[in-house]
Image (cartoon, rainbow, N blue to C red; front, side, top):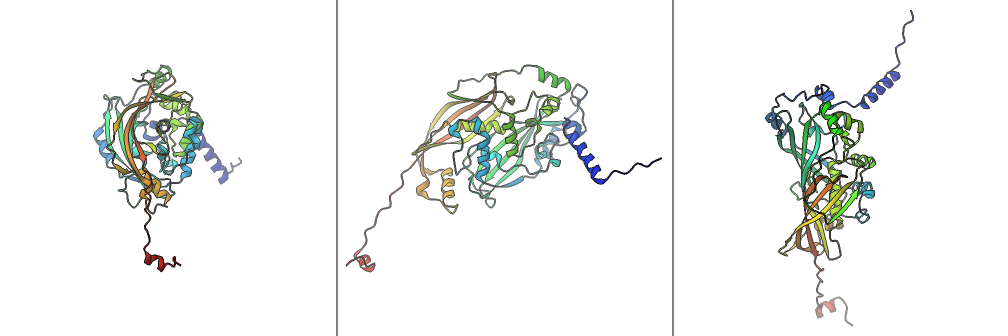
Length: 416
């Protein structure tokens, strides 16, 4: 009998690579691949299982903060502007700024874990309730304060992130875990007490749906909730797979619900690819910014926003971004320096100092806005409240010319 020849090492590596590729193309649930649970029974296996929420909370709050450094290259913001070019009003694109545009900070400080260290759905394990049945992650909302706190100055900035709250909502067997993450961005890693951008993110973690639940989600018509008021201005766009891919690449985000349609339908029970939570936020901020006053003597900027995601937005379906003014708050008209103007001046001076004549301005007041997103059926998917600041630049003070004395004239040889 002839002995079978042992395969060569390159052949074995090739076979192993093909096996890995085949596995990666097969939609495997997070519970099957990562935590040893299975959802093939057609019912929630863990519905009757007792979950120790306090233990989950204690473990997650004890996790040490994460710190990320990033160079504030304008090219990163420019790439995001390029990705959004086909989806925004023309005058909102390619405007050169010294300050990071609203929402563009979200493409800086990306996750730096290799793929082997991610959760099976492609998300960051730092935020996840590990070794639990809560394997599905969604972006539920958040808030941002101090949008003008970062410069596009090629310098190194720092983002510090930590989990500040964990709680459960829902009845036994149908709980959802809400994780609140605090991210603080500052202009210098040496002085993290500097005022920068403060952001809170609320992530929600859910159980993997049963086969019956997936089928129901795919077949039933979603419930439509209408917005309570009419917009003063609206803009409609249709997100494409290319846009979702570009945003995932810019943010180094491998979450499969934005990239893998089969995974969306077969594992998580969504109809199609989902628009990123931070992408919809960036689009909302861009549309609001396009409506603000910008001229030689006055300018208006977004200072803060609070937002909530209420329903998913799908690729290929039109989304309508709506803006309506809520009210105006008068200012005390004190002369102040706007932190964004300080950024602008520091960028001009190579970050060596600030020119008071460049940054002097007066606050005229604050405006509040309702911003929301409707899907193709007019259903409310995202709602938010933003606050903007309107300022007027003060004229540059002319330096008085001092008359020279007779002694100075003779000393400088200016007399004949």
